[in-house]
Image (tube, rainbow, N blue to C red; front, side, top):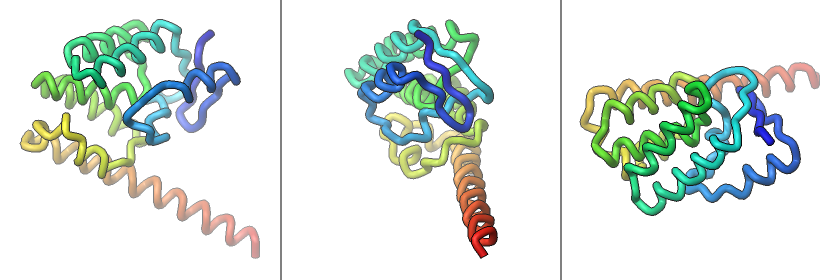
Length: 166
């Protein structure tokens, strides 16, 4: 069975949703469940298997294996990936000292406009080595802008709802 995601919402069968909920992740923020790429995206069982194994390797601090498995999962899915997995891949690359790959992943998720958790980004221990790189400010600025756009959108919807109610 393939799990299908869309940019704004999740389209999952009941069993696929159960599989998604059962994944043990140290990054539970729901915004990570949105795929980086827009439109409907189907992820194969190999993607799910590899990203789960990569997550387990990351928790065991086997950063090389985690990075390799995330890269394979993305490659096997034509370069497509979920924000949570891209974020974890960035952490693995940063832990290995591969700043270029870490920033590649971070920029990919921040350009999506769906990553809002600046506090987590700045407090993530594995990403601390990136803070002195000039690219760090670009990434955090993009997250701030995404967060503000999200808040503005919510406020606009609330105003619209209030106006319709009158």
